[in-house]
Amino acid sequence: MPRSFLVKKQLTNKKPNYGILDSKVDELHTSLVQPELLCYISSTPWLPGPSLIPTPASMHFPGVDGDISLSMHSPRQESTYSLSVSHNIPLRDSHSGTEPLGPQTILPSQDFRYLEERGNMRNPLLGLVPTGVIQERFECFDCHKAYFTFSGLAKHRQLHCQWQCHKYFSCKYCDKEYVSLGALKMHIRTHTLPCVCKLCGKAFSRPWLLQGHIRTHTGEKPFSCPHCSRAFADRSNLRAHLQTHSDIKKYQCKSCSKTFSRISLLSKHEETGCCPLS
DNA sequence: CTGGGGAAGGGGCCC
DNA sequence: TGGGCCCCTTCCCCA
Image 1 (spheres, rainbow, N blue to C red):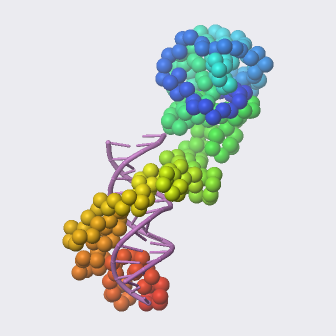
Image 2 (tube, rainbow, N blue to C red):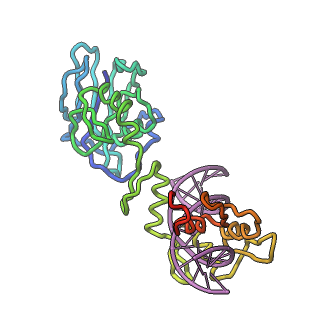
Image 3 (cartoon, rainbow, N blue to C red):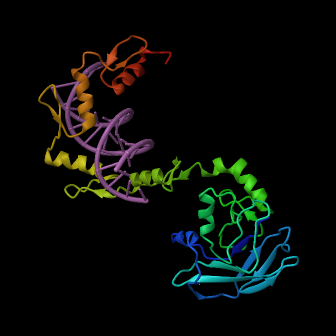
């Protein structure tokens, strides 16, 4: 059973310091220790039951040879806290069989989420959530279901929540949802319209849209038709134009077999009642 | 009404 | 992670 340390902290928008996870940190970059802060240790087979422990603290656990030191740290000029766990015994997660923790482990609380997102389900610290309040359970940071044991949370994550919870990123301006943060950010630009034309003030979501718009001012038409003398400012419009040179129209009505150069024309044709079944 | 041009929106992919 | 590009689509206007 894992040990869990939940830290009372202020949530910030700062980026987690991921680098700290990958490197051995042998020097505490701390500027202060807040003794009133508490950390939480969950129930485990070999540690005492759930306890709120003021830090810094040096603790001895029954049946364990050695002491464990806990202290809370605030990196300089940051409002987040990290928890330092120092011990002189090989701490091992008895269930997952993970490697013993090093002689000193520093756990920036925001990085708990990072561990989770890396899919490292064997890490005994998974599921810990810096929510700004002291937790009394292993809590899923997606759906906030609480479990008394880590294995309960791990099973929940694997069987129930993994798909449901990671599926969507919601837009704060509308009700659209996306499967990735990048796609969401792209969509948000359609609300914020950061690309503004200096000539007319019209705003666009993306630079290349603005570029295409500027061509309407300059008259530039870089896309030429190989079959006639026409040129177009937009490649898609050239493509639509090329259909006019084709003997075979690309889009065909399933009912009357009439063909159209554009799907929009076919759609309009079908909407007018040619295909009552469709 | 139809066909075509112009302009623009938006998701996905690649670098 | 952001920018550029591709592709598809839609809407509007006009002949």
